[in-house]
Length: 487
Picture 1 (cartoon, helix red, strand yellow):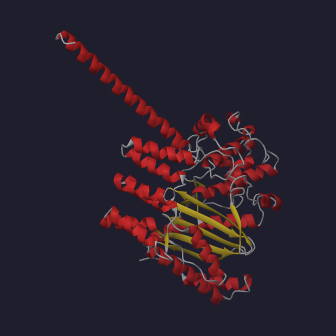
Picture 2: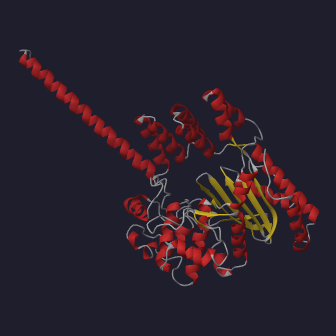
Picture 3: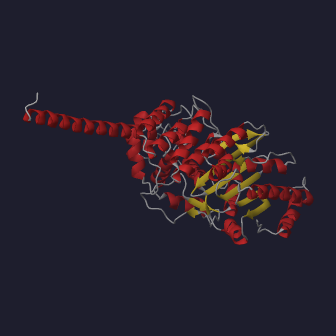
C-alpha cells in the first residue's frame, strides 16, 4: 500500500494559479497530467522500483509535488527531511568556480597547480576547465583505489602524485571523476581564502534561502574531501536552486551560458559542461545531473525553453532519468515509455527462490523477449553480482560476473568486478587473469593495476617460501642420507 501526502485540493489550488501563468493549459488538463504522473510512479512503487518524492514545476509554478512510500509517516519524512543528493552537489561546486571566475580570482584555463600548489609537477597540462568537464584524465576514486569513508584531501593529493604518470592526457576523452571535483573544492578554498562549506553557505545557500541544504553531518573538517558530494537538500530547496539559475541571480547570463557548452574531446564525445550534462532534446536545451549516495538517489533536470524543472529524491535506486523523460512527454501530451524495470532485482528474487542456474536462465529468456520492460545494461548484472558477493555467495557472484563479461567483453569495469570476486573467493590466479584483462581494456584503471601488483607480490612471496621449504627439505634429506652412509 502507498500513500500520497499532498491532498488533491492543494494541487487543484495550484492549478487555479496555473490558469493565469500557463494559459495554454487549463486546470483540468493539468489535473489530468498530475494524475498520470502519479499513476506512473505508483506502478513503479508497486514493482519495488520507486520510493521517494517528485516535484515538477513550469516557470516556477509547481504542477506536481508528491511523496510515495509504504506509510504516511515515511512519505512525510521523504518530502520534508533533507536527503543526501550525492553528485548533484557538483552543480554547486561548479557554480562556486564560476562565481570566483567572475570575480577574477581564477580563470578556467589556469593550471590547477596554480590554485592547488600541492599538485605542482603532478598535473601537467590539467586546467580548471578540464576538472569541471571531467576531461582531466584523472581517474575516479574507485579506479584510484581510494573510494573509502573519511577520505582526506591529503590522500587525494598523494594518490595523484603517485600515479599521475599513468593518467590519460588531459582533453583526450570524457571520464567521470569525483577526484577532479574534490580537487576543485581545494581550488575554491585557496582562491576564496575561505572554507569550501563556508563559501557555499554565504555565497549560495543563504542568499537563496536554501535553509535545508547543508553538509550531511554538519560542517566538515578542513582535511575532509569536499566538492564531489556530501550535501543534503529537499525538493523545495532544489526548486529555489532551479529558479536562481533561471533568474541569473548568482552569475551573469554570459558566464552561465559558457558553462553549458559540453567539452570537446579528442576521442569519443561528451555531454558534460560545467557541473551539468547538457544536450538538445526536442529542440530544447536540456541540462541535468544525478546523484547517488548512502542508499539515496537524486535528480534535477531543466528544460530551458519550456522552463520545466523536474526534481526527484528517492530512497533506494530508481529510474530517475527515464521518469523525467516520461514526465516531459506527459506535460506535452505525448505518448511516453514507462521506465524500465530492474532486471537485477527480478533475477535476485529468482536466484533466492530457485538458485543461480534458474536466475541465469531467466536472464537469457528476458534478453530474448522482444520489447522487454527490463533494463539489460551492464550495471544491472554488476549490481546483482555485488549483492551476491556481499552476501558471501561467492560462487553465485562469480557466475553472474562471468555472464556480464561475456555480454560486455570490452568493459574494463566488468572484468575488474570479476577480478574482485575471484580475489575475495581466494582464487588469485583467476583474479590476476581478470584484472589483467581489465587493465588491457583501460590502461588507466589504477585499481586493476594496484591489485595486480599485490597479487604478483603475493605470488612471488609464496613461490619464495615454497622454494625455501623445498630447499631446506632437500638439504635435510641429503644430510640424513650422509649420516646413514647413503650417497
